[in-house]
Image (cartoon, rainbow, N blue to C red):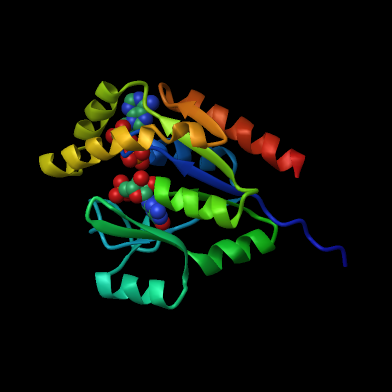
Amino acid sequence: MRKRKPGKLFIVSGPSGSGKSTVLREVFARRTRMFFSVSATTRGPREGEKDGVDYYFVTKEEFEKMIEGGLLLEHAQYVGNYYGTPKAPVEEKLREGNDVVLDIEVQGAEQVKRKAPEAVSIFLLPPSLEELERRLRGRGTESDEKIRSRLERAASEMKLAPNYDYNVVNDNVEEAADEILRIMRRATHRR
Ligand code: ADP
Ligand code: 5GP
C-alpha cells in the first residue's frame, strides 16, 4: 500500500480579541477535513465553552503533570494561566494525512516552529489597537483588569508579527477567512 502523505501543520496566533476563534470558525465551516487541536488550559471556562471542545479545562496540578509526562507539544503561561497543546492527537492526525490547526500564542508558536520548521505560521492582526480594545470589551468575557493585562500583552505580541510566514488583518471576518483559506490551499498544494 502507498504511504499516505503527512498532513500540514498550521499555527494561528494573534492578540486576544483579534478574532482568531471567530475567523477560524468560518475557516472550518468551509474547509471541513481539518483537525482543530483542542488545547489544555488552567483558565476557567467562559459561558458557552465546552470541556473537550473549546479546551480541556484542567487544574494547575493536572497541567503540571502533563508537562512532566512530556504530553505537550508546547506550553506557555499567558496572563496568569497555563495553556498547552496535547502532543499525541496532533501527531496522530498529521500521520494520518490530516491537516492540523493550532490556535496558540506567540511563545508556543516559537516552540512549535523550532520543532517543526515546515509548519505554516499565520499572525492575525486587528485593524488597530483601538479596535482590538473595542472587540475585547464588546466580547464581555473578562474583567476590566484582565482586559488591561491582555491589551498590554497584545502590544508586545504584535511586534512579533514579522516573524510569522503570513500576516492577515481581520477587518472583515469573511475576507480574513478567505485569505487564510488561500494560504492553506497554497501550502497543501505545494506539499
Ligand atoms: P480571539 O479568539 O482572537 O480572542 P474572538 O474571535 O473571540 O477573538 O473575537 C473577539 C471579539 O471580536 C468577539 O466578540 C468577536 O465577535 C469580535 N470580532 C471578531 N472579528 C471581528 C470583525 N472582523 N469585526 C468586528 N468584530 C469582530
Ligand atoms: P483565551 O484565554 O482567550 O482562550 O486564549 C488566550 C491566549 O492563549 C490566546 O492567544 C490563544 O491563542 C492562546 N492559546 C490557546 N491555546 C493555547 C495553547 O495550547 N498553547 C499556547 N501556547 N497558547 C494557547
